[in-house]
Length: 193
Image (cartoon, rainbow, N blue to C red; front, top):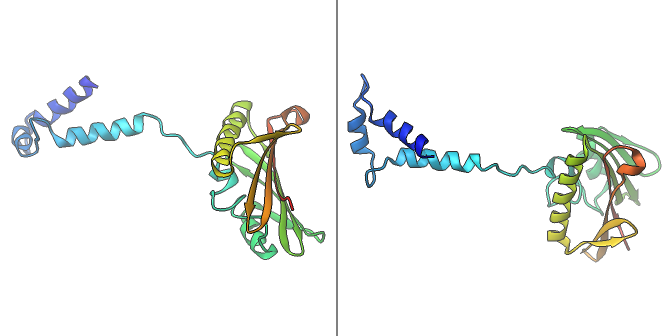
């Protein structure tokens, strides 16, 4: 860090044909230090610490909805509109299916409707490798614990319950990698009432 400061300090104080670095330094110093250098060092420090990327939002969507902009109780037309970007294929049985890729993950999503309202979301998420699955699962568990309280374990599933507008919604997450022979998480969100 000291070498970086010394280098930048020497650049600002070295003579130049177009301006005098010494004059610039006199105009732009605070307690003998250049604010430019301090700001540059602060900027470098912020970005060198490795900011944590959000790996949940591209797959799950923002926290305001339950899955990719959709929530239990949403009308069929709204879910269909939101799912168009995900290659939505409607069926006559009140089911909307989507198959698509996000980064290195493949998703197969099934939206089920009861009387034109979203009743259940089943998402199968296939990851490129186990490390990516583990990181995603850890972040999702943290998000759900923060939103819905501490996770419960029920029959091999991680389960959270949310009461909204008089309806209980259950979230169930399972690692099905062994059964499928590749890194895979299954997420089910459904009306529990």
